[in-house]
Length: 218
Length: 305
Picture 1 (cartoon, rainbow over the protein chains, first blue to last red):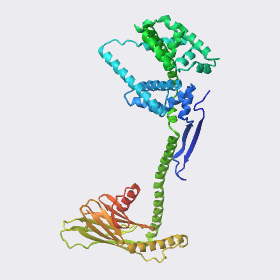
Picture 2 (picture 1 turned 90 degrees about the vertical axis):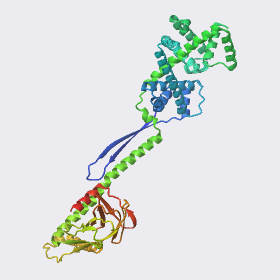
Picture 3 (picture 1 turned 180 degrees about the vertical axis):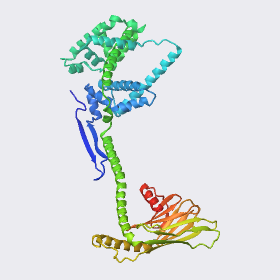
Picture 4 (picture 1 turned 30 degrees about the vertical axis):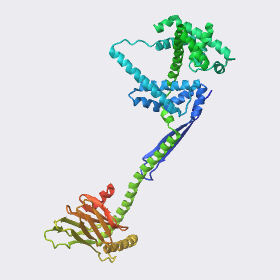
């Protein structure tokens, strides 16, 4: 297991200011706490992400939280929207980094900022469309992706591990069979392939129990 | 293609795990089969559903993080060092401002002590100061100038020198004011001191004081000259025992205040509710009002005596 920010040094300064003898001490026992955390280089962060170490996600989230949320807040966004956009943007970054799609040529913060900015622009457009359709009085139909997400979530909870992990490693992390085998201590890629096939079949059964293909497209 | 193989191909297609050749061949198949296209669309929704499921897990993980400490962590070590340095500087500055006036206070207190000693001595000495202020430019009769003579008993070593009130006529451009400070020293034979022994040191101090006063007497003949200018900027030249005030001094009366202590002699100008410190300068120097509250209080007291 990899620990990020595991070591932290806490330095406490006690500063007593005695002006001079005979005068009342006006500044006494000022306490300064300076906490120095391990600072990771950008490459170290990317290495941790590529290993699927989710503590790297926590580290990034905390590190750039003020910077990214400020962008949304300054552009007419609420705190909730700022949090949502930053979390979505960070997960997009995480997914790209973990799947090896990330060809980063700038600083992580710059790249993350551009993702978050795009996310916020998309959200603004969505809100604009929504207010337009509301004005027109048309009925807003549920998005098939939203319905499916709900259905898959319920099905995945029923499936439990190891199917949940195999499927998410395959579809979300876009890991190869051999990578999943390494991660989950399976003997080889073929075992994972068979496992994944079975899990996917079980998932399909659970989905199709209540919904058919036509429900989503008609 | 078997059912299993087709599903595997769809999964590979959706997870970008096909080579370029495999991909283009598969897309060709999709375009030929609407059924396959529909199936891929459905499988894509399921794949997105799985992704969203994982995203949801990650989001709830992030929501549980405490961001309270994040502000500290977002600042780099450099920023922390800079902040620490600034804190130290601010504290240093604060302590400087707190210390500086107190040091002044200490010096003033010393002066006060000296003053008290001198006052004790002056009870016997009864020194008087005669100040004559004369105007040598009385030829123009249109000028309405009033000069005043002040005779005042000195209560301590601080000597208040001259007071002048002038209303400027239209033609007078130059005035010369002379102030003479005469210190009449009483005869001191020491016989009045019935207890010499305990006051030996005081006697020594008194001698020093007398010397000092003699010096004050010798240097205190201040000649004040005014160069009238319409400019609102007030300037002065103070060299030797000559003080030249440059600017528009016609509107209000002014006062010259001499503050003579054993250690030094300070000269101040009071004009239109402002006090100005005068330092020796042979060049024209701007009159800058005193802003130090302690010094202002001190000068007000001195002037009101």
